[in-house]
Length: 210
Image (cartoon, rainbow, N blue to C red; front, side):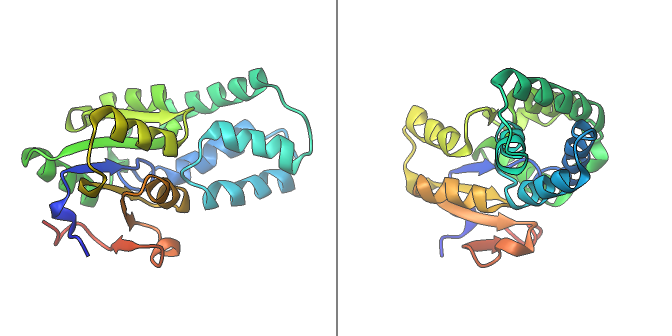
């Protein structure tokens, strides 16, 4: 097993890895969809929690097309996503939500000159706003999010920088993160989700890692 400290490039998921924001995301979906049947919203929440790496655009479309069996326009998806983003901007600027175990490791690797990126299923504009407010943008060469898929974003980082795949690792907390790494043939480490401990390598804590 290649040790984490041997990688020259680290791609970080955001929600659940750098920030304890998953419960806030849950609240956002429930709030935006409050006027829809409770049972249907609960079905979406199961899908949402099992697919943490997917964007809200995909999840809202899934809600209408696969749960409600209704047609939905791109404009309606964007409107719901904008309502969701307003709630996120109000709720996620709290520095107490930062996961210090992982962020302390980010700061350590930054001081060592390791190249790092955020690759998230969260909306890119919103994500960059949050990272600026939380004063963590400086640790990353760039911050990427939806509407592009995580798979596309990882491929873009590799191709545009001509990185060797052997020198890159993605750290995430969902099956979707693992799939993005697998499809791009880079290493993956899971974190902060007991459901993915068997997928590949798993980090219990960054405290003892170099």
